[in-house]
Length: 234
Image (cartoon, rainbow, N blue to C red; front, side, top):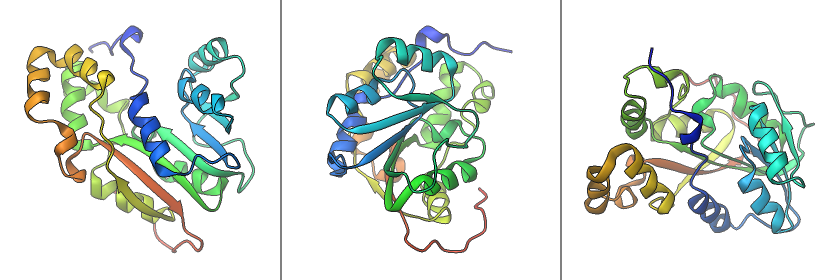
């Protein structure tokens, strides 16, 4: 069995692209209450708090919660286990998550919890990798066709993600977010070398149609009256 990538190489998201996505949504208003699921080391949480926004985070890794509290002592972050969120119904105007959905085995329960804590007509803004491209990347990164699958257990295609969110009671809109930042280039260089950078220069993922992008950015609004649907199965 091959080893997973070391903790020194763990990535915590394309902060520039993620913030641009949130800003372009127009939803970061002073009077909104925000929940970040999977807050990691707390970098995005800290950025939003620095703007004076009312934001709290939840994280399933005790190590990341400890790091977050050390790096940003003022951050409000709670340790959680599983998909259950420690909040009462309809508490948040906005729920956000980045590079989270693909790690959750029970996405139906996760989306039901997000919907439960959102206020009527509230929004779930999320980013998750494209199943088609990420499967290739993770195979290269882990140097294995199978070892990464337990970690990235819920990768989605464009249509799968659209159907899954709709079945959970959301109206879905994919958005155009440019992801080729310094973070993205460094990640490509680290795992694919100069050949990856050359490929990036001639075939930028930012120019691809939305269904083929390396990362999906989605604005999902809680429907006022959810449709009665069976749980979606891929």
